[in-house]
Image 1 (tube, rainbow, N blue to C red):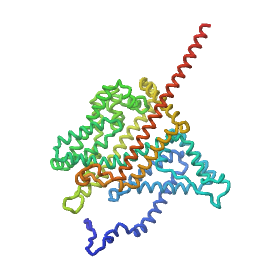
Image 2: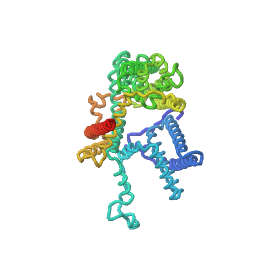
Image 3: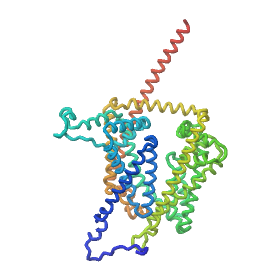
Image 4: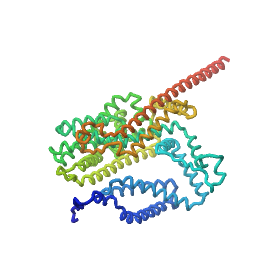
Length: 576
């Protein structure tokens, strides 16, 4: 009221359930949101239908629709977050999008004839196979880890006898689905499903739980240190993380924004310590670029393994190499230095022997990413600080909204850098194709890549499900079952698996001095199942790689015998 938050006051005579009425009375909300959801669904259908007009190919219109709808979802998320309604919004928008697509698909199917539906499905499936056929096993693995439900109903009185062959528990549709399932390369699909599960556990447990635990410990451990000591610790951690090929820079900047604020608040004030964190982050990025270029790329450029990890013979890296070899600092070069993958780009500069100073200058625009990312980390920490007066109110209630804005800004800057880099790489491919074709390939890396391809082909050959012995099948199935069980335990029993823990908590106070108390018994079971799944998978991979190497040796011997036979035949022909 008049800019002041007003909360209901409860007397001692009120029953405890009275205080919960505001959270449990949904009747008025349903009356309001029902027509709103119907209107929103109709709006989605109208929006979807506009792309069905004959203005281009189906693929072009589908991509155009996906881009515009993704932008609208992003706008809705930002608007709702700024209005203070961001909690759970990502899940809500995802559910809204999924339900809208399902409703639109039902509408389209209902308005098409059976022949038209069959033609459209076959056309779509063929396009999918042509464009993404090599990635379908990955999608099948995702389908498997999420759980697949077959239609397994008994025959009813109304069912035609021709739809059931013999006395079976399954309908014709269910048998068709199971036949398709049996046609899959199950070893590959199971392996990808385990990878998907491992990624899910990594994001929901390792990243979401233990990262917060580590950061809170780091804040607590450095709270009594001075700024130079904390800076030294963070620089050391940041350099180690930057030297790992898969690690991008944004999480490192975010960590600096979170940790430096509580330490430097008393010395520099909030604005001062945030600005200091930005400066340290930029300096860390430039120092890591120096190490990656001069130490890894420069000193180890003769290592085939390093050049292979960079992907020196791939189309992307060859195009980047052509752009980076230009003199000066053009937009294309700066876009690649800031928007390309951190580790491969800097190491590639070292392998090419490019001078360091221009590369560091071209990397400076990355400050546009550093600033909002550090702000997001700082505001995230500030939003979790509670006043000491016992009221439980946040000291900075605006910080959560500010963190959302900073995160959105960082995401847009990162997307802009990546889009700009992709644009100039694509432009190089299309406009300088002759130069790319004339560029020599790294023969040593090509030989190593060919050996990897031969090994992968042999691996695929020995892991055909029908040829795998029973003990290996059981090991892989145990790995998959353990991973699926672990994922569902974490998803369905999250509150019972892990202790609630926030960034401003301390291990001594909230976990009784033992960091392992963040995991409850159910959580330990899920983690042990996860470890068991990885162990079973490693055993299977060890067996399969051994079989693949034996097959390669056998093929090499066979090829050698054939070559010797051909040479002997040529010698005999020459003597005649």
